[in-house]
View 1 (tube, rainbow, N blue to C red):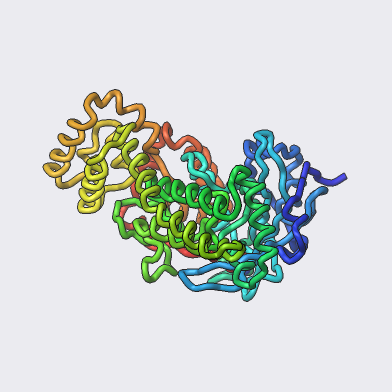
View 2: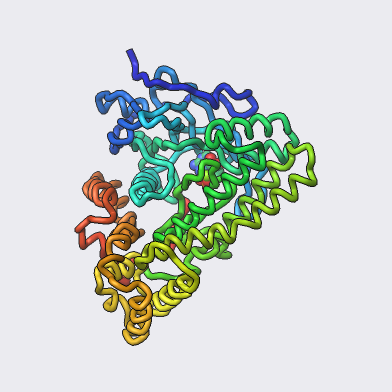
Length: 470
Ligand code: AMP
Ligand code: MG
């Protein structure tokens, strides 16, 4: 008998215009290179020999109980509407309800062509697969809502990018893969019954207390407002905040050209395709709000009293800047040891960030050093830092009280770009030691002692640009 899990596939029970039923395309020689046993436990997935797991998570064998399909969605990419995107290289195997009572999607990414592949080959190569594995799991360990990584499988096949590269499949786990773009596709096509059905589905699945379309908008705005503040607090730049990469669950999704900043600059951009800096670090709050405005526009199409809905939605979206500001203040205040921020604390934080920017201070290390009382070394303009530190100490008082909060709020390590690149290069040549090391240390970002992983890149190690990694 084959591999089986307790699937319960609610999405596959939606009408057929929501997706295309399709098995993953088999691969030649699946080999498991990473498996997340802890996550498998939570999901209640059965143990199996590595070969069996490789076959399932490489897309060779469809597990019993799965209902594989590619989801339909649309989305604004860099501000321009693409009427049809959809899973071009992903297959949703199905859903399981975990031991924690949460329902989650299990999705293969890189599993072959679908009707939504357009010009793409439906495949992924090992680099982005391992990158997403490490970064999404690091995000989870940082306490930030995110999709997670269950497995990485080498396919034994090559994929052609700029060069010939080893193919791989990532198994991604999410509370769902519903996106703003899933609503947009039906709204733009005028399929209002489907839009309603999707709205009901999203409410039942994620926010059972939400009252109708506007209630859903309110809760998603709240989740996204908190999420973006959390990203900011760890120096994370998503890189492709298109509406198809903006989840209804409020989880971070799609780790393409994302990056954690080394030296702080508010306008930092890594993504090679983000020429205008649309998705620059400090632009992210504005973009989340823009994305929620698109979500509102889609949702409104189903409301009987259109005028009232527009008014309501406008108010909800306009409430976002203050919400984000509040979460931002809470998160950054905690980073400097303030549990209950007051008026004026925002300025204290902004002034520190301005000093960091002027000095090119390392984002992660400066806050870690602040926690440990030796941040002065992070700055070249010591007088300016000393002046700031005096103000800070006046505000915070006994630093030993603040230290615990700071230690919980300031990770010691993040997945730095140059380490990810190094890890990928090693894995391509068959050495998974750097992958395993990143995996182990990034699982305990607040108390790792790995000094070497804390080290910022040397000038010749800096990775200035990231790529979409398709
Ligand atoms: P992303 O930028 O990863 O969010 O992807 C945007 C769209 O392009 C989605 O519809 C993807 O499924 C699709 N896509 C990305 N890479 C590929 C690929 N290699 N083959 C087919 N479709 C792809
Ligand atoms: Mg995407």
